[in-house]
Length: 102
Image 1 (tube, one colour):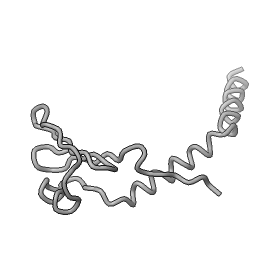
Image 2 (cartoon, one colour):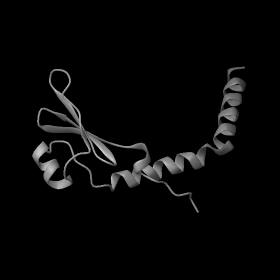
Image 3 (cartoon, one colour):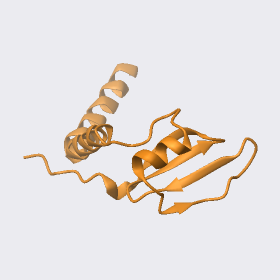
Image 4 (cartoon, helix red, strand yellow):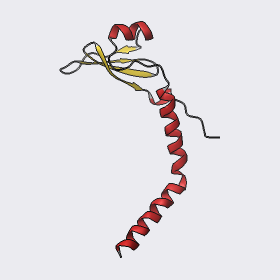
């Protein structure tokens, strides 16, 4: 009985996988690859290094919390700082354009 239930679950999951989820996964993977090739601020850079390399941000948000976290918005990404150091960079949703697999 358990074997029959597991087989049924596997068949159903295989049906979902074959129903079109694969192209979306491929597009997402391609977007991640493209994002990985973008020149963005990296963890550990200082605010001065970010300004020197990427220019002035479009928007600077006030620090929040303790330790203070600051966000700078650029056209294609936002940079989060703790004190004077980059914590991480978030690429905006529309900054990476995927192409349909051909």
